[in-house]
Length: 213
Image (cartoon, rainbow, N blue to C red):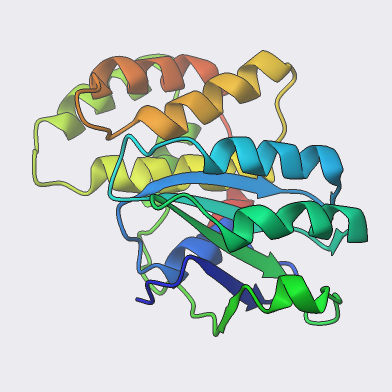
C-alpha cells in the first residue's frame, strides 16, 4: 500500500467498498463524503474532517466520491492537499472524464482500483441490518465474545457503505451514524454500547442490496 497522502482513483459510479479495498481494508478511521457534486461548503467539511486526529488506527482516511467538483472548490482544496495533517490521508474517486485543475491534479498519486473479492465482506452488517432489534442486540453480545474476530472491522466497513448509499430522515440520525463510524473499534471505546446504539439507529427489516452487489 502506498504511503502517499493523497490518491486518486478514476472510476465512474464507484462505491465506498471499492474505495476501502484500495487500502486492503487497512484499519483506519474513515470519513466518507459521497454525493454528485462537491462545492465550497463541502470543501469546508472536508477540511474540518481532515484536521481531526484519528481515534482508530494510524491515520484518518477522508474518502471523497463524486461526479463533479467546481473550480472554486478545487482551488479551496489546494492548500489542504499541499499541507495535509500528518495523520490524514485522502482518497478521491472521480469519473475518468472529470477535469481537474493542473495544480490540484499534481497533488494526487493516480492509482488503479481493485475489487474486494471477499464474498463475506458485507455479510456481518447485512445480517445485522436485516435483523429485528432483539436479534441485533443478542448478536452483538455473541460476536464480541470472540476477541480475534474481524467483526468490528466489518461492521465499520458495512456502516460506511450504508452511510454512503442511504439517506436518513433526520440530520441528527446521519450525525449519529458518522459518530458511531468514527468510534466503533477505537481505543478505549465501549464497543458494546456503540453497537447497541447502532442497532437502535438503523431501520429494521432491510437488506442492503446496494452494498452487497
